[in-house]
Amino acid sequence: MRFSYPFRNCTVKNKFMAITVFGLILIVWFGNFSHSVGEIERRSVNNDLFNEIENLKRRVQELEHGQKVYPEVKFLNVKDRKRILITGGAGFVGSHLVDRLMIEGHEVTVVDNFFTGRKRNVEHWIGHENFELLNHDVINPLFIEVDQVYHLASPASPPNYMYNPVKTIKTNTIGTNNMLGLTKRVRGRLLLASTSEVYGDPEIHPQNEDYWGHVNPIGPRACYDEGKRVAETMCYAYHRQDGTEIRVARIFNTFGPRMHLNDGRVVSNFILQSLQDQPITIYGEGKQTRSFQYVSDLVDGLIRLMNSNYSMPVNIGNPDEYTIGDFAKIIKGLVGGNRKESQILQELKTILGWSPKVQLEVGLNRTIEYFRNELRRTTLDGRHFTKLPGGA
Ligand SMILES: NC(=O)c1ccc[n+]([C@@H]2O[C@H](COP(=O)([O-])OP(=O)(O)OC[C@H]3O[C@@H](n4cnc5c(N)ncnc54)[C@H](O)[C@@H]3O)[C@@H](O)[C@H]2O)c1
Image 1 (cartoon, rainbow, N blue to C red):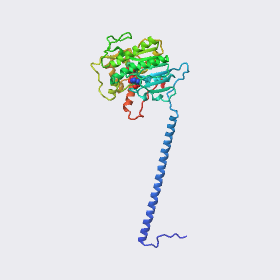
Image 2: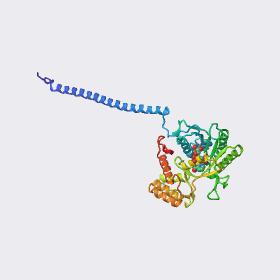
Image 3: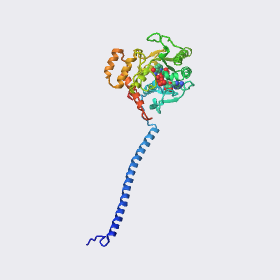
Image 4: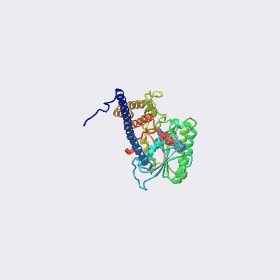
Protein backbone atom coordinates (compact mmCIF):
# COMPACT_ATOMS: atom_id res chain seq x y z
CA MET A 1 0.00 0.00 0.00
CA ARG A 2 1.17 3.45 -0.88
CA PHE A 3 0.74 6.34 1.46
CA SER A 4 0.33 9.69 -0.38
CA TYR A 5 0.76 13.17 1.07
CA PRO A 6 -2.74 14.92 0.76
CA PHE A 7 -1.47 18.33 -0.45
CA ARG A 8 1.09 16.95 -2.88
CA ASN A 9 -0.46 18.60 -6.01
CA CYS A 10 -1.51 21.93 -4.36
CA THR A 11 0.10 25.36 -4.78
CA VAL A 12 1.90 26.96 -1.84
CA LYS A 13 -1.01 29.43 -1.36
CA ASN A 14 -3.60 26.61 -1.25
CA LYS A 15 -1.43 24.64 1.17
CA PHE A 16 -1.26 27.69 3.47
CA MET A 17 -5.06 28.13 3.36
CA ALA A 18 -5.65 24.45 4.04
CA ILE A 19 -3.36 24.51 7.08
CA THR A 20 -5.09 27.67 8.38
CA VAL A 21 -8.55 26.07 8.07
CA PHE A 22 -7.25 22.92 9.77
CA GLY A 23 -5.80 25.05 12.59
CA LEU A 24 -9.14 26.88 13.01
CA ILE A 25 -10.98 23.54 13.22
CA LEU A 26 -8.53 22.43 15.92
CA ILE A 27 -9.03 25.65 17.90
CA VAL A 28 -12.84 25.38 17.77
CA TRP A 29 -12.70 21.71 18.75
CA PHE A 30 -10.31 22.40 21.66
CA GLY A 31 -12.50 25.29 22.80
CA ASN A 32 -15.52 23.00 22.88
CA PHE A 33 -13.51 20.35 24.65
CA SER A 34 -12.28 22.68 27.38
CA HIS A 35 -15.79 24.13 27.70
CA SER A 36 -17.11 20.61 28.37
CA VAL A 37 -14.32 20.02 30.94
CA GLY A 38 -15.33 23.30 32.66
CA GLU A 39 -18.94 22.19 32.51
CA ILE A 40 -18.05 18.85 34.12
CA GLU A 41 -16.05 20.62 36.82
CA ARG A 42 -18.93 23.02 37.42
CA ARG A 43 -21.31 20.11 37.63
CA SER A 44 -19.12 18.40 40.21
CA VAL A 45 -18.88 21.62 42.28
CA ASN A 46 -22.66 21.97 41.96
CA ASN A 47 -22.98 18.37 43.12
CA ASP A 48 -20.85 19.12 46.18
CA LEU A 49 -22.95 22.18 46.96
CA PHE A 50 -26.10 20.20 46.34
CA ASN A 51 -24.95 17.52 48.80
CA GLU A 52 -24.00 20.18 51.35
CA ILE A 53 -27.42 21.83 51.04
CA GLU A 54 -29.13 18.43 51.36
CA ASN A 55 -27.14 17.76 54.55
CA LEU A 56 -28.13 21.13 55.97
CA LYS A 57 -31.77 20.52 55.05
CA ARG A 58 -31.66 17.21 56.90
CA ARG A 59 -30.11 18.93 59.93
CA VAL A 60 -32.81 21.64 59.92
CA GLN A 61 -35.47 18.91 59.69
CA GLU A 62 -33.89 17.09 62.65
CA LEU A 63 -34.01 20.29 64.66
CA GLU A 64 -37.58 21.00 63.56
CA HIS A 65 -38.66 17.55 64.67
CA GLY A 66 -37.40 18.08 68.19
CA GLN A 67 -34.11 16.25 67.99
CA LYS A 68 -32.24 19.15 69.58
CA VAL A 69 -29.51 17.98 71.90
CA TYR A 70 -30.21 19.17 75.46
CA PRO A 71 -27.95 19.09 78.51
CA GLU A 72 -28.60 15.86 80.40
CA VAL A 73 -31.29 16.10 83.10
CA LYS A 74 -32.07 13.70 85.94
CA PHE A 75 -35.39 11.94 86.00
CA LEU A 76 -37.49 12.69 89.08
CA ASN A 77 -40.68 10.78 89.62
CA VAL A 78 -43.96 12.59 90.22
CA LYS A 79 -43.46 12.51 94.02
CA ASP A 80 -40.15 14.40 93.93
CA ARG A 81 -40.60 16.51 90.80
CA LYS A 82 -41.69 20.10 91.48
CA ARG A 83 -43.31 22.67 89.20
CA ILE A 84 -41.13 25.72 89.69
CA LEU A 85 -41.72 29.28 88.50
CA ILE A 86 -38.68 31.55 88.18
CA THR A 87 -39.53 35.20 87.56
CA GLY A 88 -36.58 37.01 85.96
CA GLY A 89 -35.29 33.58 84.87
CA ALA A 90 -33.73 34.94 81.66
CA GLY A 91 -31.42 37.21 83.66
CA PHE A 92 -27.95 36.60 85.05
CA VAL A 93 -28.75 34.82 88.36
CA GLY A 94 -32.11 33.46 87.18
CA SER A 95 -30.65 31.62 84.18
CA HIS A 96 -28.08 29.83 86.38
CA LEU A 97 -30.89 28.84 88.74
CA VAL A 98 -32.85 27.52 85.73
CA ASP A 99 -29.86 25.38 84.71
CA ARG A 100 -29.49 23.87 88.18
CA LEU A 101 -33.20 23.11 88.67
CA MET A 102 -33.59 21.70 85.15
CA ILE A 103 -30.58 19.42 85.63
CA GLU A 104 -32.06 18.25 88.94
CA GLY A 105 -35.12 17.11 86.97
CA HIS A 106 -37.78 19.69 87.91
CA GLU A 107 -40.33 21.35 85.63
CA VAL A 108 -39.30 24.97 85.23
CA THR A 109 -41.35 27.91 83.94
CA VAL A 110 -39.52 31.17 83.31
CA VAL A 111 -41.42 34.44 83.31
CA ASP A 112 -39.49 37.44 82.01
CA ASN A 113 -40.20 40.72 80.23
CA PHE A 114 -36.62 40.76 78.82
CA PHE A 115 -35.87 44.22 80.21
CA THR A 116 -32.37 43.17 81.20
CA GLY A 117 -32.67 39.41 80.58
CA ARG A 118 -31.90 37.67 77.30
CA LYS A 119 -33.56 34.69 75.61
CA ARG A 120 -30.12 33.35 74.73
CA ASN A 121 -29.37 32.83 78.45
CA VAL A 122 -31.94 30.01 78.47
CA GLU A 123 -32.14 29.10 74.78
CA HIS A 124 -30.42 25.76 75.39
CA TRP A 125 -33.62 24.63 77.18
CA ILE A 126 -36.18 25.94 74.70
CA GLY A 127 -38.25 23.01 73.42
CA HIS A 128 -37.38 20.72 76.36
CA GLU A 129 -40.46 18.99 77.75
CA ASN A 130 -39.68 20.23 81.31
CA PHE A 131 -39.18 23.86 80.26
CA GLU A 132 -41.49 26.77 79.46
CA LEU A 133 -40.58 30.40 78.68
CA LEU A 134 -43.23 33.11 79.02
CA ASN A 135 -42.77 36.69 77.89
CA HIS A 136 -44.70 38.35 80.71
CA ASP A 137 -44.33 41.41 82.91
CA VAL A 138 -44.86 40.61 86.60
CA ILE A 139 -46.70 43.88 87.17
CA ASN A 140 -49.59 42.03 85.46
CA PRO A 141 -51.29 39.15 87.29
CA LEU A 142 -50.32 35.62 86.28
CA PHE A 143 -52.40 32.48 86.68
CA ILE A 144 -50.40 29.27 86.48
CA GLU A 145 -50.14 26.17 88.66
CA VAL A 146 -46.82 25.78 90.46
CA ASP A 147 -45.36 24.45 93.73
CA GLN A 148 -42.55 26.96 94.25
CA VAL A 149 -41.83 30.50 93.06
CA TYR A 150 -38.35 31.99 92.93
CA HIS A 151 -39.16 35.69 92.55
CA LEU A 152 -36.10 37.33 90.97
CA ALA A 153 -37.74 39.73 88.52
CA SER A 154 -36.17 43.15 89.06
CA PRO A 155 -33.30 45.04 87.50
CA ALA A 156 -30.30 44.60 89.80
CA SER A 157 -27.48 46.92 88.74
CA PRO A 158 -27.58 50.69 89.39
CA PRO A 159 -27.66 51.81 85.71
CA ASN A 160 -30.52 49.38 85.06
CA TYR A 161 -32.67 50.14 88.11
CA MET A 162 -32.12 53.90 87.81
CA TYR A 163 -33.00 53.87 84.09
CA ASN A 164 -36.73 53.87 84.93
CA PRO A 165 -37.13 54.30 88.70
CA VAL A 166 -40.94 54.26 88.58
CA LYS A 167 -40.90 50.93 86.74
CA THR A 168 -38.37 49.56 89.25
CA ILE A 169 -40.71 50.43 92.15
CA LYS A 170 -43.73 48.96 90.32
CA THR A 171 -41.84 45.74 89.56
CA ASN A 172 -40.79 45.31 93.19
CA THR A 173 -44.13 46.26 94.74
CA ILE A 174 -46.99 45.43 92.32
CA GLY A 175 -44.94 42.60 90.80
CA THR A 176 -44.18 41.07 94.21
CA ASN A 177 -47.82 41.46 95.27
CA ASN A 178 -48.90 39.57 92.13
CA MET A 179 -46.43 36.74 92.73
CA LEU A 180 -47.45 36.49 96.41
CA GLY A 181 -51.11 36.38 95.31
CA LEU A 182 -50.27 33.53 92.92
CA THR A 183 -48.35 31.69 95.67
CA LYS A 184 -51.23 32.10 98.09
CA ARG A 185 -53.78 30.80 95.52
CA VAL A 186 -51.75 27.66 94.70
CA ARG A 187 -50.71 27.16 98.37
CA GLY A 188 -47.08 27.13 97.29
CA ARG A 189 -43.92 28.74 98.62
CA LEU A 190 -42.23 31.95 97.40
CA LEU A 191 -38.58 32.91 97.75
CA LEU A 192 -37.91 36.62 97.34
CA ALA A 193 -34.54 37.65 95.88
CA SER A 194 -33.98 40.65 98.13
CA THR A 195 -30.70 42.48 98.46
CA SER A 196 -28.03 43.69 100.86
CA GLU A 197 -29.13 47.14 99.64
CA VAL A 198 -32.01 46.96 102.13
CA TYR A 199 -29.31 47.95 104.67
CA GLY A 200 -28.75 51.13 102.59
CA ASP A 201 -25.70 53.06 103.73
CA PRO A 202 -25.11 50.94 106.83
CA GLU A 203 -23.79 52.34 110.08
CA ILE A 204 -22.55 48.96 111.29
CA HIS A 205 -20.21 46.39 109.71
CA PRO A 206 -20.82 43.62 108.96
CA GLN A 207 -24.61 43.80 108.84
CA ASN A 208 -26.48 40.88 110.31
CA GLU A 209 -30.11 40.16 109.53
CA ASP A 210 -31.37 41.94 112.67
CA TYR A 211 -30.03 45.29 111.49
CA TRP A 212 -32.87 47.50 110.20
CA GLY A 213 -30.75 49.48 107.80
CA HIS A 214 -30.04 53.11 107.05
CA VAL A 215 -31.79 54.09 103.82
CA ASN A 216 -32.42 57.47 102.28
CA PRO A 217 -36.04 57.15 101.11
CA ILE A 218 -35.75 59.91 98.53
CA GLY A 219 -32.25 59.28 97.12
CA PRO A 220 -31.57 58.07 93.54
CA ARG A 221 -31.18 54.45 94.70
CA ALA A 222 -34.38 54.48 96.76
CA CYS A 223 -36.46 53.01 93.90
CA TYR A 224 -34.48 49.80 94.35
CA ASP A 225 -33.63 49.84 98.09
CA GLU A 226 -37.09 50.88 99.24
CA GLY A 227 -38.74 48.74 96.54
CA LYS A 228 -37.02 45.65 97.98
CA ARG A 229 -37.84 46.72 101.56
CA VAL A 230 -41.56 46.97 100.64
CA ALA A 231 -41.27 43.60 98.85
CA GLU A 232 -39.95 42.04 102.09
CA THR A 233 -42.74 43.74 104.09
CA MET A 234 -45.33 42.28 101.71
CA CYS A 235 -43.88 38.78 102.12
CA TYR A 236 -44.28 38.93 105.91
CA ALA A 237 -47.75 40.52 105.61
CA TYR A 238 -48.95 37.57 103.44
CA HIS A 239 -47.23 35.17 105.82
CA ARG A 240 -48.88 36.62 108.96
CA GLN A 241 -52.29 37.24 107.43
CA ASP A 242 -52.73 34.17 105.19
CA GLY A 243 -50.02 31.74 106.30
CA THR A 244 -48.34 31.99 102.87
CA GLU A 245 -44.96 30.25 102.95
CA ILE A 246 -42.15 32.69 102.22
CA ARG A 247 -38.35 32.75 102.17
CA VAL A 248 -36.28 35.94 101.95
CA ALA A 249 -32.69 35.95 100.62
CA ARG A 250 -30.72 39.18 101.05
CA ILE A 251 -28.20 38.76 98.25
CA PHE A 252 -24.77 40.39 98.30
CA ASN A 253 -22.62 41.22 95.22
CA THR A 254 -22.49 38.29 92.80
CA PHE A 255 -20.47 37.71 89.66
CA GLY A 256 -20.10 35.09 86.91
CA PRO A 257 -20.73 34.37 83.24
CA ARG A 258 -23.90 35.96 81.77
CA MET A 259 -23.55 39.00 84.02
CA HIS A 260 -24.12 42.22 82.11
CA LEU A 261 -21.12 43.79 80.43
CA ASN A 262 -22.58 47.18 81.32
CA ASP A 263 -23.39 46.15 84.89
CA GLY A 264 -21.50 49.23 86.06
CA ARG A 265 -20.02 47.57 89.16
CA VAL A 266 -16.38 46.73 89.84
CA VAL A 267 -16.20 43.15 88.51
CA SER A 268 -17.49 43.95 85.03
CA ASN A 269 -15.71 47.33 84.91
CA PHE A 270 -12.33 45.87 85.88
CA ILE A 271 -12.60 42.89 83.51
CA LEU A 272 -13.67 45.07 80.57
CA GLN A 273 -10.92 47.61 81.18
CA SER A 274 -8.27 44.88 81.52
CA LEU A 275 -9.44 43.06 78.37
CA GLN A 276 -9.35 46.32 76.41
CA ASP A 277 -5.91 47.22 77.76
CA GLN A 278 -7.20 50.31 79.50
CA PRO A 279 -6.07 51.50 82.91
CA ILE A 280 -8.34 50.27 85.71
CA THR A 281 -10.41 53.03 87.28
CA ILE A 282 -10.22 52.98 91.06
CA TYR A 283 -11.99 55.70 93.00
CA GLY A 284 -9.99 57.03 95.95
CA GLU A 285 -7.06 55.00 97.24
CA GLY A 286 -8.67 51.63 96.56
CA LYS A 287 -8.76 50.82 100.27
CA GLN A 288 -12.55 50.50 100.39
CA THR A 289 -13.64 46.87 100.81
CA ARG A 290 -16.21 44.68 99.02
CA SER A 291 -17.21 41.03 99.06
CA PHE A 292 -18.02 38.97 95.98
CA GLN A 293 -19.56 35.58 95.55
CA TYR A 294 -19.57 33.36 92.49
CA VAL A 295 -23.01 32.79 90.99
CA SER A 296 -23.10 29.00 91.55
CA ASP A 297 -22.49 29.52 95.29
CA LEU A 298 -25.47 31.90 95.35
CA VAL A 299 -27.64 29.39 93.46
CA ASP A 300 -26.70 26.72 96.05
CA GLY A 301 -27.74 29.07 98.82
CA LEU A 302 -31.07 29.98 97.18
CA ILE A 303 -32.07 26.34 96.66
CA ARG A 304 -31.07 25.39 100.20
CA LEU A 305 -33.03 28.31 101.65
CA MET A 306 -36.12 27.53 99.56
CA ASN A 307 -36.15 23.93 100.80
CA SER A 308 -35.36 24.76 104.44
CA ASN A 309 -37.79 25.39 107.27
CA TYR A 310 -36.36 28.84 107.93
CA SER A 311 -38.66 31.77 107.12
CA MET A 312 -36.71 34.77 108.46
CA PRO A 313 -34.45 36.83 106.12
CA VAL A 314 -31.03 35.32 105.35
CA ASN A 315 -27.92 37.13 104.08
CA ILE A 316 -26.33 35.22 101.19
CA GLY A 317 -22.87 36.42 100.28
CA ASN A 318 -19.25 35.80 100.93
CA PRO A 319 -18.47 36.93 104.47
CA ASP A 320 -14.92 38.05 103.65
CA GLU A 321 -14.32 41.50 102.29
CA TYR A 322 -11.20 42.74 100.55
CA THR A 323 -9.94 45.93 99.07
CA ILE A 324 -10.79 47.18 95.60
CA GLY A 325 -7.07 47.73 94.99
CA ASP A 326 -6.25 44.04 95.63
CA PHE A 327 -9.17 42.98 93.50
CA ALA A 328 -8.02 45.15 90.57
CA LYS A 329 -4.52 43.64 90.81
CA ILE A 330 -5.91 40.09 90.73
CA ILE A 331 -8.09 40.73 87.67
CA LYS A 332 -5.29 42.48 85.79
CA GLY A 333 -3.02 39.51 86.55
CA LEU A 334 -5.57 36.92 85.42
CA VAL A 335 -6.41 38.74 82.18
CA GLY A 336 -2.72 39.22 81.35
CA GLY A 337 -2.07 35.55 82.18
CA ASN A 338 1.11 36.56 84.05
CA ARG A 339 0.17 35.27 87.49
CA LYS A 340 -0.02 31.63 88.43
CA GLU A 341 -3.31 30.50 89.98
CA SER A 342 -1.53 28.86 92.92
CA GLN A 343 0.31 32.14 93.63
CA ILE A 344 -2.98 34.04 93.58
CA LEU A 345 -4.68 31.46 95.78
CA GLN A 346 -1.89 31.67 98.31
CA GLU A 347 -2.22 35.46 98.33
CA LEU A 348 -5.96 35.24 98.78
CA LYS A 349 -5.65 32.80 101.64
CA THR A 350 -3.09 34.90 103.48
CA ILE A 351 -4.40 38.39 102.67
CA LEU A 352 -8.07 37.62 102.56
CA GLY A 353 -8.40 34.36 104.47
CA TRP A 354 -10.98 33.20 101.91
CA SER A 355 -11.47 29.72 100.57
CA PRO A 356 -14.96 29.57 99.06
CA LYS A 357 -16.46 26.59 97.24
CA VAL A 358 -15.78 28.15 93.85
CA GLN A 359 -12.44 29.82 94.34
CA LEU A 360 -12.24 33.43 93.30
CA GLU A 361 -9.73 32.95 90.50
CA VAL A 362 -11.68 30.02 89.04
CA GLY A 363 -14.87 32.10 89.03
CA LEU A 364 -13.06 35.13 87.65
CA ASN A 365 -11.44 33.10 84.87
CA ARG A 366 -14.86 31.80 83.80
CA THR A 367 -16.24 35.33 83.87
CA ILE A 368 -13.27 36.76 81.95
CA GLU A 369 -13.67 34.02 79.32
CA TYR A 370 -17.37 34.94 78.96
CA PHE A 371 -16.55 38.65 78.60
CA ARG A 372 -13.75 37.92 76.10
CA ASN A 373 -16.16 35.91 73.93
CA GLU A 374 -18.86 38.56 74.16
CA LEU A 375 -16.39 41.26 73.04
CA ARG A 376 -15.21 39.11 70.08
CA ARG A 377 -18.70 38.13 69.00
CA THR A 378 -19.70 39.67 65.68
CA THR A 379 -22.53 37.37 64.61
CA LEU A 380 -25.61 35.83 66.14
CA ASP A 381 -23.90 32.43 65.94
CA GLY A 382 -20.75 33.44 67.80
CA ARG A 383 -22.27 32.38 71.07
CA HIS A 384 -20.67 31.36 74.29
CA PHE A 385 -22.45 28.59 76.08
CA THR A 386 -21.46 28.56 79.69
CA LYS A 387 -20.52 25.12 80.94
CA LEU A 388 -23.57 23.92 82.82
CA PRO A 389 -23.37 22.41 86.27
CA GLY A 390 -22.73 18.69 86.20
CA GLY A 391 -20.47 19.08 83.17
CA ALA A 392 -23.43 19.19 80.77
N1 LIG B 1 -26.55 40.17 90.85
C1 LIG B 1 -26.37 40.61 92.08
O1 LIG B 1 -25.23 40.89 92.50
C2 LIG B 1 -27.57 40.80 93.00
C3 LIG B 1 -27.35 41.32 94.28
C4 LIG B 1 -28.46 41.50 95.11
C5 LIG B 1 -29.72 41.14 94.70
N2 LIG B 1 -29.91 40.64 93.46
C6 LIG B 1 -31.29 40.31 93.06
O2 LIG B 1 -31.33 39.11 92.32
C7 LIG B 1 -32.30 39.20 91.28
C8 LIG B 1 -31.67 38.83 89.95
O3 LIG B 1 -30.59 39.74 89.69
P1 LIG B 1 -29.67 39.60 88.38
O4 LIG B 1 -28.31 40.04 88.75
O5 LIG B 1 -29.87 38.27 87.76
O6 LIG B 1 -30.31 40.73 87.48
P2 LIG B 1 -30.73 40.68 85.94
O7 LIG B 1 -31.04 42.08 85.55
O8 LIG B 1 -29.73 39.93 85.14
O9 LIG B 1 -32.06 39.81 85.99
C9 LIG B 1 -33.32 40.33 86.31
C10 LIG B 1 -34.34 39.69 85.39
O10 LIG B 1 -35.65 40.20 85.71
C11 LIG B 1 -36.30 40.54 84.50
N3 LIG B 1 -37.31 41.57 84.82
C12 LIG B 1 -37.09 42.84 85.25
N4 LIG B 1 -38.27 43.46 85.43
C13 LIG B 1 -39.23 42.56 85.12
C14 LIG B 1 -40.65 42.60 85.10
N5 LIG B 1 -41.32 43.72 85.44
N6 LIG B 1 -41.34 41.50 84.72
C15 LIG B 1 -40.68 40.36 84.35
N7 LIG B 1 -39.35 40.27 84.36
C16 LIG B 1 -38.63 41.36 84.73
C17 LIG B 1 -35.20 41.05 83.60
O11 LIG B 1 -35.54 41.06 82.23
C18 LIG B 1 -34.09 40.05 83.93
O12 LIG B 1 -34.21 38.89 83.14
C19 LIG B 1 -32.87 40.62 91.33
O13 LIG B 1 -34.10 40.61 92.01
C20 LIG B 1 -31.85 41.39 92.13
O14 LIG B 1 -32.43 42.45 92.85
C21 LIG B 1 -28.86 40.46 92.58
